[in-house]
Length: 416
Image (cartoon, rainbow, N blue to C red; front, side, top):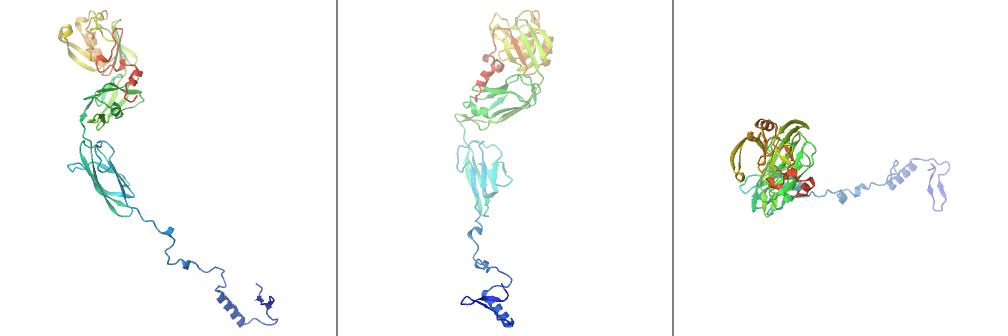
């Protein structure tokens, strides 16, 4: 403001310093007094400090920390559960806290194998449990609030009315031919085939289209749509332990199989030309004269269709009471079905080989030619026979898989 003015009078006229009146110490004191009365400082226009009004009040409610929660414990299965599958998920999960210590014990007090997650919030069982047993939890969890809570409870696994074992036809680290089916045989009838099939998997080193099919209530086979690619490695996993097959019957074991498919070798035999030819990777490597089953007798006909080599025997004893022969030993016998059909050596029929069909259903070769074929063959090789009046079918034993058209094979899956 102007240095010579201090305000206005009651009448509205301005009051000013009289001319010639010099400003002295008293004036300065009055001015200082006015400043003190107003409570202002000469160098600031700040308003009074209001922080002092909050001092000691504890701040606003939003600024206060929320209380930390206690641990929440979840058991799977729930405490007191009964008839639990021995392969059902079994775990303990802690929310708003961590697992401090935990054991699951069987009725004898033996600890069950399990694993704790890295963040210590979940413990999961790491092995199958037993049938008809009670398992007990013992342990503790610590909540975010620092409080310790006990982990307790128990559950009981199902007691089956019966269990079924299984067998598989493929051996570990074996090599098979390109027509080899995977055959799983159960020790009794399976009612819930879908449940069993879901637990059976086939993995291959190269993409292979294939499917399970149930041949009856006790047999499930897996085969590819076409012959296996040569060199394929195959892993079979049967996670059947604890699987409910229906009617209170459960699987009693898991099984695995790892095998390899070898070179591509296919036999093509024609009952009309009396020849058996061997093809390796598409190239013919042998052409043998042969004698097949006598066509005039339906009981002696060699069936047409794709057979599969099932086993090999350097010598084999043949018996057929219907045709009155017993313990006829033949060399270099390769079984191709379960109805008595073999490719084998037989010197007495050499005269007919390449000319007539005189056998009782087997494929007769000379002993030397039979040895050559025997040495080249693998279990799982296809033997394609054509020209006869009887087709291979389900009555011919286990490996009639390739006689079933693919669409029909797919319809035989429990998951079709």
